[in-house]
Structure formats: C-alpha cells, structure tokens
Image (tube, rainbow, N blue to C red; front, side):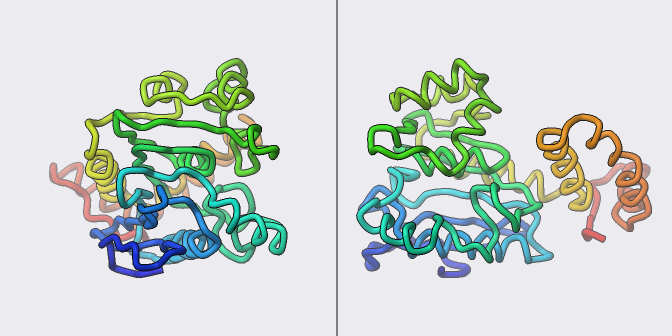
Length: 271
C-alpha cells in the first residue's frame, strides 16, 4: 500500500491500494484500472491495512473509498483469489480492521464510498459496509455470485434486506441482474447521484463536512445507530444518557458551546 500517493499506475499486475491524506480525511483508492479494479489477494490485504491505518490514526476523522480509472470494481479476480481464500479461510486478514464491517476488529469512523462504472459483487458489499454512498450516474450494479456457483459472503445477504427491504433484496440478490444508479438510489443503496466523473469530488466534500464535526460526537452517534440495528432499540436507548454525559465532559463539547455563542465554526480536537 502506497501512502500519501493517489497517482494511478498499471505497473503492478496485482494492483495496489493507494492511501493519501486531505486534512482530516483519508483517501483510500482501488488501483488496478486495466483489470476494472478486479481484486487480487494483494489488494485485499492492502485494503484491510488501509482501513486499519485509518482507524488507528488519531488525526483521521473520515475516509473516502474510491476507484482509480473508470470502474469502481468488477469484483474479485477469482483465479487469483480462490486459492487465497481456501488457504486463509476468508477474504481479509483476521488481525486487521474488516472492510466489510462484519468481523472484529471493526472500525468506528465513517466511510463515504464514491462508486462509478462497474460496481459488482464485492464492490456493492464494500459500499454498503460503509456509511454513505455517492454514485456516478453511469454506475452499474450487480450481485451475481449465484451465477458463479457460490453465495455472496461479504455482507450482501444481510445488508440488501436491511437497506432495501425483503422484496427488493431478493429481486437483485437472487437473480443476479444488473441495475442502475437510479434504482440503487430508490432502494436506499445510494444517497446521491452525480454527473460522471464527479463522484469522488462529491464524496470528498461530504467526508470533509463530517470531518469538521466534533469527532467524539460523530463516533458516538454512528455507534449508537449501529447498536440499535444490531442489538435492538432498548440497548441503544440505554446507552444514550451515559454516553452523552461522557461527551459533554469533553473539551470538544466546551468548544462547541463557545463556537455557538461566538457564532463561528468549532475547532474540535477529538478530546
């Protein structure tokens, strides 16, 4: 994984993950455009490392997952990845942050996905594992593992129904048919559609807006929403008051009050 580097290159046949900083935002790029960003074992390992670096960086407050080239990803490069999966028992290293947000260790910080062109299989699962999705108007989506004789194992079976409802989920998950950005927005997979080529720009704008908020509050709100999804309403409600009190005792909460009375943006430090 190349840090502080966003320039695409096809010199490595196995692709790579780029990692760059833009203030408090981290830009994580899929970089194998000659092969439609088809994932190789090297890219899977590097992507998990990028998420781990993002989670562990106290200066990082939001990330943008994007693609170099014209396509987000056509999916896994199966001839390369299948032996790797059989040997490792999974797609991502077990000691790193899981980009699919399924297995611990899990991240706590928000990810905005910018998708374009082909967004197939693992591409859909990665964007749904994030928090906000911006899609170029030309984006095409497809979850067609059934046509390859396997099941979708990166969260699609859970998040399709969670986001889109049962009927919509089964329509696209079981048929493997392709659908467009308008349909993806209708069923809740995509939050914004942009003109072609502007997905990364808009996703970065959203990530910068998130990064300007108080990071302790951002993490707490995301975690409470996740708790409601995973553990139920009662568990989320029980956490609100103690977590709010903890945050109100922070320096950021005091800065938020000062910035409100002084009518200026807050200068938050995450403490």
